Amino acid sequence: MNLKIRLMQDEDLEQVLAVYKRAFAGLPWHEDLSDEEVLRRWEEAFSLPGFRCFVAIDEDTDKLVGAHWHDLMSFARLEAERGTNLWLWVHRQMERMSQFGCLIIWERELVVDPKFSRQGIGTLLRKSFLKEKQKMAIPNLILTRLREDNIGSIKPAEQLGFQKTGIQKPASEEPFMHDYWYLLVNC
Image 1 (tube, rainbow, N blue to C red):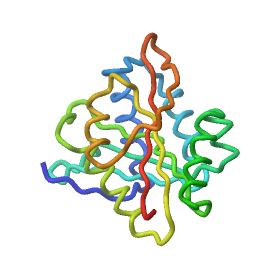
Image 2: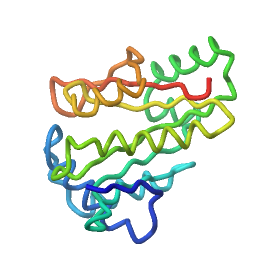
Image 3: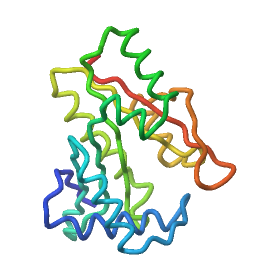
Image 4: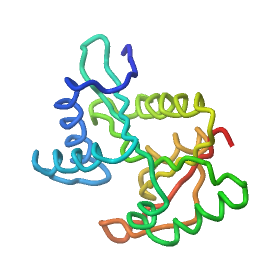
């Protein structure tokens, strides 16, 4: 497969939503999402400050096979969305590093069409995202949440330098937990 990673274009939206729906229908989530719910989640993410989305295109078929989107996170929104424990952890990290000018970036979603999983597409999407952040002159603290049993996402994140914050939150499926992860870029 010849992959091309680029920023999402308006005409990609339908394929991004279809990949999202198929990805969440499989392991580990098994969510049977309606088209309306997928669109609602997208519109919510799309409206966030600093939203950017990378897509992976199979150049042989011109099909979209994966997407990665992220946004900027303020301290207020971080606490409101993710709770006081993560907010305190971020505050302590920035204080320790004297990096209060650091951008907080939330890695919102990384989805790959299940037909193309385990081919490194997610890693390539994340690498493109990180490459963009490394070009910035200011420090970035990248945060994400990974479910503890999602080894297919955890191993590549670790290989790229992501580390656990030590903070967890219960997943919607008992007894699983979500771990919050981070990566410092340009610090």
